[in-house]
Length: 371
Image (cartoon, rainbow, N blue to C red; front, side, top):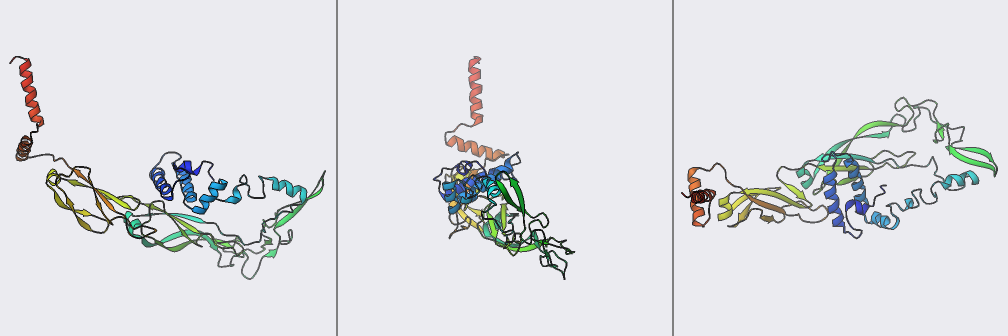
């Protein structure tokens, strides 16, 4: 785990709300995303930010982190776990025969988790989609059913450790005769040896395969969202459960829309006449085109809100809003008639154009020259 304070990493206070933490994470994730930021250290920074958010966004993990300085209380004793005390367990094993609790090497063990990064379109994140993903992973060998032995045979109990997976090493020390337990070198802690190995997996009991998984992406997910697919990770060993698959979503940007949480932002141009006189224009939304009334005298940079035209709320009802910013476009390549009309308009309003300012400068110049 990173030694840096998670709150400091996200730039929030220790009493920050869930919304504040989420907003800070989104901002930093966009800044340091490996697909966007190519600077050295950006990818590691992104991973650290993600780790901090995963802890602080989970109420139980955050509570443990606030109390123990880690999301896993068992790691609170100097990283060695309760009862380990930073390596003193080995010393106790040497002098007292390893009387403490040990994990049974033949006990069922859970499989490793897998992570898959998936890129989706902007509107797919908004509305959700069902898709299939191809995941390469390790699976149990169908030929030997995971035993590693050739069909028709079976593994033998290791004669060195008698199936325990451990060897006892006896040492004579000034303190007396000591016994230390180690992983059996003959069977690598498996407790079994294989004389005739399976020709498919070569004795490992596992093979590499690509698995097709149906994935349902809910409407409203955002960039950096993570989905957990239970039981689709690496298979467990000795009858243990499989790990989980974590799908990290990367959302492409859109040419017209920008997203901030559940709200959508866009910018539309207006002519001078539309802004001055008012108008009714069509605005594209995520699902359709809607009419927007522009009041007379609208200034550039004004925002209009289209209620309920944003992104569906991922954990709730309803949708966000769409915010439309209008920008007045200055015309170019005017015709002579258009220029005359604008001069007339400026004159009626008592304004002076650049041409009028120029003629005044010429008159002042003549006055200085005594002409």
